[in-house]
Length: 116
Picture 1 (cartoon, one colour):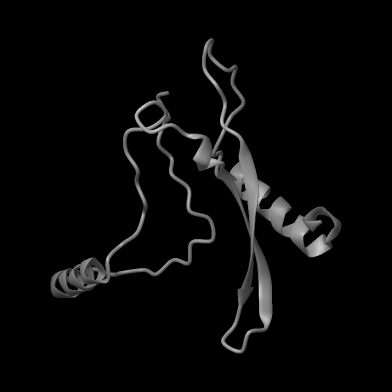
Picture 2 (cartoon, one colour):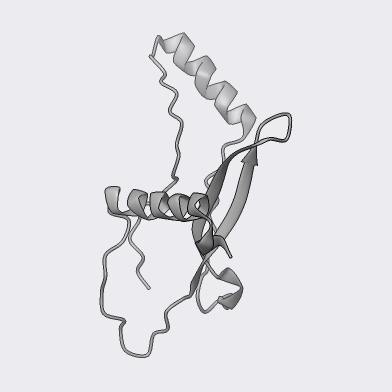
């Protein structure tokens, strides 16, 4: 259904273009006796304070419910900062006279190599 809406298709293309821009992945051969994980699109409407749809958000995600704990992964990492940590950082930066820049990250990408 989403493939028939031009706004959703544009959002999907934008997500894929971000992957190409930041060189998130490269095509490799699947090693012997290894399985690949499926992906799916996650769709969400971003709304303003009055409930009007501002834009469509689309993310390509791994179908995590197919993972088996202990076999497919051992650690889970969520890149989330606590508010107290941000306050401490800003206080320290102010004390040391550092210049702090704010960046609006449209796509969060982890650059680590997957060893599995």
